Length: 502
Image 1 (cartoon, helix red, strand yellow):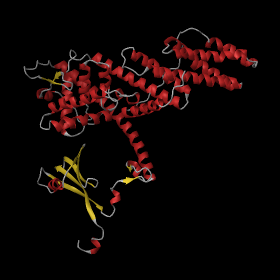
Image 2: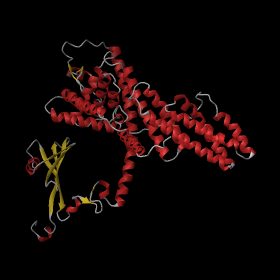
Image 3: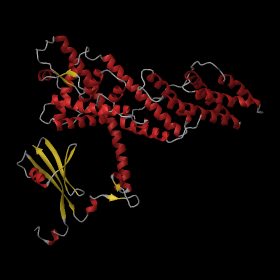
Image 4: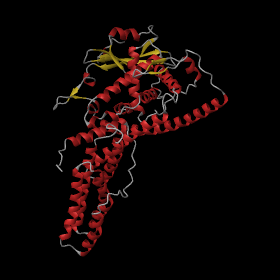
């Protein structure tokens, strides 16, 4: 029947082969896909994409080798090669990729679906965090009960060994006996110990994959040490790289921040170990075994080896750095949008928190002069807006302008005079005061003269006492990727704006 003309009118050719290895209830999947650019087959196996051959595809597809066989074949119309071949923009000559290859209506549908998916992820993370907290409390209660009823015996000689950690220092090694004695937590997806579970998990799994590729025959303990070394090497390279402000690697990982600020080596080691103890790691046996060894090693760390108060203090400092970065980022974004009222509040707190960070080390915070510049410019912009409102003479506008000065500008003047990061701060305060004093010699209505007379003493107060100011704005949660991209955009945009010369 396949020789019938009606069955041979459209030429089809094999495009992809999906392979399964294992049994009906469990196993592993990978795919062979034909690449027209290289005129050959590619093998897609988890995060690994390698060149393959027709011989390897045939070997894995017909059964009898490693209990693997093909279970799905995909064919395409050989006359419609445009479905898989690259498309190039007529005007730019660049290859069209991703969403740009889709029709406009499908592009909008995908974008809306991605937004909905992100919302679902946030809900999922919240539920898993709640579940993880409940399990943590239950485990803590069980551990307390067990320690109250039994006395742990000293480990036999030779049961604990030392091995090189990810940075070359010695760390306690887990043994199979200790692993067997500890309760094996249910292997389910839970929120990572950090706020950036998904991003951090991808980097962790990438380090594990690299370690497995180099030490494929070794056990989970050796693989854990190798993966930690891979990840530490990557982060050390980021910490040592000289980058512009828009590519600040400290926001990408807490370890980069720790390295640049010379945190104790034990703090770095425990932080990396906690990263690999994340129960969100991939669901294959390889990641599970490595995660379990990391959990055991975490439990073996004693207070004498790592001071937990110091450990938590360093992580709080990093969180303060991220918060400061967010205040600065939002403040600069609002400044660019000419929303100076809201921008000032964010920039004020960005400067104050950044100052606290810099008092402990040069690399604890951001460039103080940059924040001071935009804080000062924001004050001058607000002063100009308030003065114009006052000059228009309308009652509502006059009240609005004086309120802006009283609640925002005047409380900030002592900050500029007290800190004096630059001489320009003092000059800015003089400009603000001179602008309002210049109205004294002008003819104006009695009601305006009365309001000005009431306002000027507060503006001209020479006291540097810090008086009441608005409370810090509440910050939302930002994933590392979003924070890096937004901060990078706003800093890059500012670097293209010439200074005003003040």
